[in-house]
Length: 372
Image 1 (cartoon, rainbow, N blue to C red):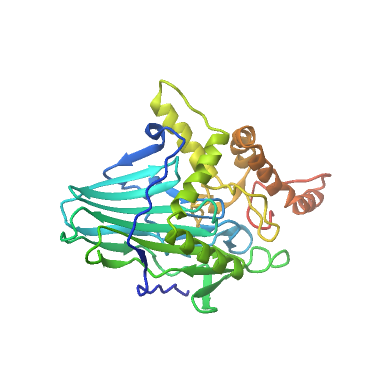
Image 2 (image 1 turned 135 degrees about the vertical axis):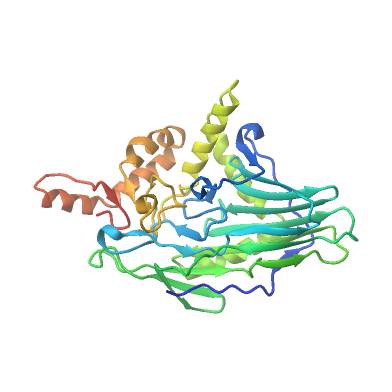
């Protein structure tokens, strides 16, 4: 087992705050707020974009197609979280706390407010820079003489048992899964990570400023050049005050294409939007990348599937029977992506059929990377 080490020096910060861009969805149906998070972590919200995903405050990140383990033991390879941030303490201490999953904007907010002070953590899997997980710590005060600081915890958990990490070029981490699913079909998977300086620890507002935003980035892909390019684009968008806006506008584009609104029943409307949000958060919104295609929808979504839990992140017939029909109706191009998860593994399905004495294709009850 090897672990990721994050430094806290050279944090990315700016003396401004990007405002939350409007959503085209009805806020009453898409902003789900509570003062207390569930004690059962299975009910914790998640953020994702079809390429990478994480459960809020959890110790794990998962990437589409990244599996570890031989044969039937294959499961989503757990990447120790570099974005599982939460607020442990604040100054002033008497702030009111609210957690909000905004399914219309695809953002999770952890907010602490009082008269003249606001501290918020914003977490999201970027919808245009799809290799990027973003955390923004926003601090605002009316009076610059007022002391404002925050202590941030990071839940990275134990070192991953699925991945070996080695240093690569400066700042870039090279990861490799430890055991191939079927070595004769596909080798162990290599991927790359680049993270910004950690937000963990105590952060004090700089003297003389009313607004300040700190940025946490986690960028993951199988291509090292893609990782470094996406990181640079994210930092530039942050500095130019449109990183969050670009993300929300992409969600707005999708909701403008299709959604389900129910007048007169707010609860049903919330359920509809939440269901679509969780499915869409596990789907890429771009054509299949031939170098790293979309593997498929697992019943637990992209943010779940570690060893011995949550269906191991495997693709079941649930994808085709239950999740495909509404997506094909509302978003035909995404429906096509789901179909391509089966055409991608057609050769393996034909082999299974032939070995069973049948013509045609026989897809397994559950499958992972190789489709067997």
